[in-house]
Amino acid sequence: MRFMMLMIPKGYETAAPGAMPDAKAVAAMMKYNESLQKAGVLLALDGLHPPSMGARVSFSGGKPKVTDGPFAEAKEVLGGYWMIQVKSKEEAIEWASRCPGGDNEVIEIRQVQELADFPADIQEVAGKFPELQAQQRKGA
Amino acid sequence: MRVMVLIKATRDTEAGIMPDEKILTEMGSFNEELVKAGVLIGMEGLHPSAKGARVKFSGAKRTVTDGPSPKPRS
Image (cartoon, one colour):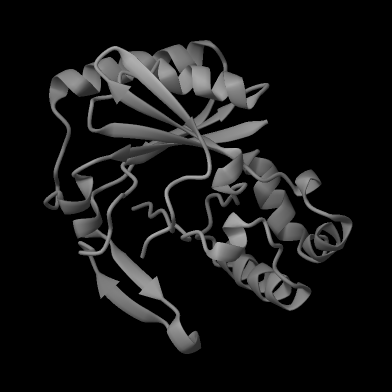
């Protein structure tokens, strides 16, 4: 089963555009990433620029409305993620616990929805979009 | 440049309520448009946070909390 490990660094919600972690933290994280790769559990990982470089699109009343970042109302934001393939939620928690996270950081673990997790009627709708399924298989 | 488009959880997604066929079909068409335009690299849905967990870091200490995550905020 696939899990996303979502890194939530406190304070990143107000980080200036172009903000970067310090070199020492990056070195420790690289070592951790390498251990995930060597164990064969790592599918993908990425870091995200701060919300001050992003935007939000909301759909109140069906009309898209764009707001530039940062977002004053955001209490928690995503700093990056890992996608891993493991045998259980416990194994995912174990991997997250090995991360050299700082005191301001939290990792949220969420299982990825596979097509087989959905009821038959939803799988049927998904069957109408073969190109999408091919795209998802590429990612899986 | 690569951009991650994050869809925030709603009360329904957190409760595990499935979208109806109309919404699914509309979303499928939208996603297919992304594929055809050649801009889609990957997309995934996540199970509700109630099935997840959080790991908090404090020095060498790790604190694991089972889901759900704190209430979705705007």
